Image (cartoon, rainbow, N blue to C red; front, side, top):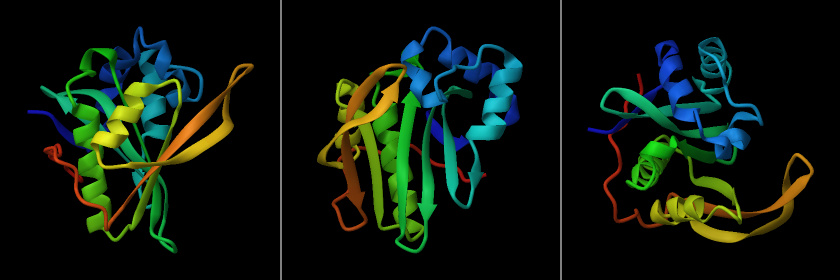
Length: 177
């Protein structure tokens, strides 16, 4: 049964497998995908954190991490956070990202956050479908917001409020530790 749980150092081989052959994930990894087990372990330790301002859950299927759903920029003055997600190519198309995002949103609202935001390149309709399925409403286009190499991309922003209706999908089970 798929579930969400915090990343572990022992997930480095699974992370390496998940990103192998997935150049579209480069932007999620700051432009450079981990290429060795040591780089994958360093990425988990440095970027897939689980603390007060950032929470990342591994999307686990049959005991193997195949993606990530997380919150960053968790800010308690305004009770906001930035949501993000990615999946290995082999795990896509099964609703795991949307179910994981819905689970993280439910957890965040239960923890006192009020507004969750996310953005995706407008040329990424799959990411838009995940956001919408998880109950995130489109709010607008930020022109030329992101730059990868020499190319700039427009970004569509989405948000979900604690007062919005829950999406009609079954959230993934979520573990905190």
